[in-house]
Amino acid sequence: MTQRWAILVFALMMAAVPFIPGMPPFWIVLLDNIGLAALVAMGLVILTGVGGLTSFGQAAFCGFGGYVTAILTTSYGLSPWLTLPLSLMASGFAAVVLGLMTVRLSGHYLPLGTIAWGLSLFYLFSKLEFLGRNDGISGIPPLSFGSVQLIGPGKIYFIIWLAVVIAALLTVNLLDSRTGRAIRALRRGHIAAEAFGVQTARAKLLVFIYAAVLAGLSGWLYAHFQRAVNPTPFGLTASIEYLFIAVVGGAGYVWGAILGAGIVVVLKEILQSYLPYFFKGQAQLETIIFGLLLVGLLHVAPGGLWPRLAALLPAKAKNRNPQAASPLAPREKAIGNGPLLQVDNARKQFGGVIAVNDVSFIVQRQEIVALIGPNGAGKSTTFNLITGILSPSAGTFSLSGQNINGTPPQKIARLGVARTFQHVKLVPDMSVLENVVIGAHLRGHSGAIASMLRLDRADEAKLLAEAAKQIERVGLGEQMHQLAGSLSLGQQRIVEIARALCIDPILLLLDEPAAGLRHMEKQKLAILLRQLRDEGMSVLLVEHDMGFVMDLAERIVVLDFGTKIAEGTPAAIRANPDVIKAYLGAAS
Ligand code: ADP
Ligand code: MG
Image (tube, helix red, strand yellow):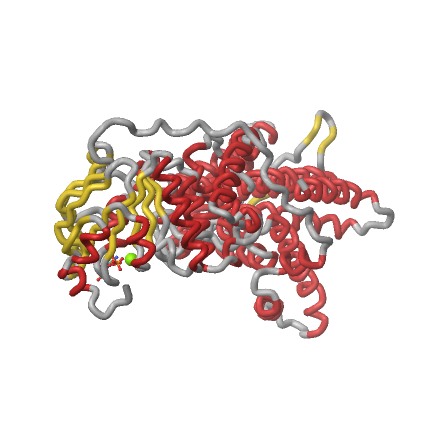
């Protein structure tokens, strides 16, 4: 709520600026340029700052927006307003094509890929005859309302800043939604998000398109502002500048895009106007000083300037706990006989290492089974095989009699298998509530467009209420609005359990859930797990605390060097000579 009010107040302020008496017209030109740059940077906020995908090619998408309207209005006489959707579609379509090629790249290859197509598109713009080569296209008509033509910087100003305000609202809405959380989770790797049903490749492509459409909008506005286009503002240098803007302002913050655009545009202008007085004739000097100043800024505020500034603003309203909402429909509990999970001769080889060596076991309905064994025995690998993160070298896995070999993690989550990770996989700069609600991803339905338009509220309220319920259930109600990264490691493991419960699982896989917990906390966890079992869930857990395991599990499977060496009741396992040998020297 506060964010949206702030945007509206900001919009009113910006609307009043041109009416300030004595406002130099040149300042309005600067504000126009700031608005145009802020639009592109806002796309980068989501793409790079939030989604973690660095693009050195955003200016090329401005080019699509600019050139499409340039050609259609000058050669075909279309009205500029008609070309707006076409310009946005062209940028979006280009993003689909380039995105499909690029988002699959990982690590450094992704930014390199964006540089490659940023460069090629620049050459394309400057070589094609019908785009006017290096001279570009001029004589583009101005935007107009009836007979009123928006000629001059003072008039198009309102359209540019209206676009910025709308983009800011849509972006804020998108980030504060089911889709937004999926995007925010991307930066921490795919595994956890996919384990809760997020289609990560689709989420990446979506932010790619979103950022490109905002850049296309900026290009369209630019074309009707300058009334001419040429390749220069759509080249690599411009793309790098947009990235600078997002980073200096604070990649990840909508306001950072506007602040960064203000700083960079004004700084460039000052340097270009005043440096020549000091260093006569040294034309390139401003580029060097500009670069040095930006590097200096990043040293002072590595996270960007917006978070620094925001810390000085009055404190935000306190987070409220989610409102009660009608509960989500529960999963149809798998009834029937036969085992819930059946692992048959599972094998996983990593090069020469046989991490899991022909292991078979069963988890019955409403049963708590423990998987134990020394470090490196293959327990976590077994979990990764069951949940589809790794594909087995051999063996079969079935859930309620259905073969799940080769099923992707998202689909396995949909079938009702939820898990926690030995190495906690939460998004540390999201609150506990936001992290946990990712677990309910598959139980919501709202897509990106509905979220941007805020039509997702009823759906969202149900998801948040479910997450809050599970957080209370695991006993972390007090910590609901704290950042997940600020909790102790033991508590973070419990947060992961709450997130897993949001799937409404039939099978819960817990990888060392009690590590880092105090005695009392372990007891509470055991009570919770028994309750869940009694309500119909099965639990498979890996745990090193033998007291905890012996007390809780109904059956125990023991692995050593990838091989199952024993299986049975706690009493039988405790007395098994092979197990004693494997654990010799280990604390029990
Ligand atoms: P545990 O969870 O029982 O401690 P893991 O399943 O993590 O054991 O590991 C079993 C063995 O497989 C270890 O020797 C480990 O080094 C190896 N291993 C696990 N994951 C990989 C991987 N992705 N690539 C190569 N080796 C792996
Ligand atoms: Mg492990």
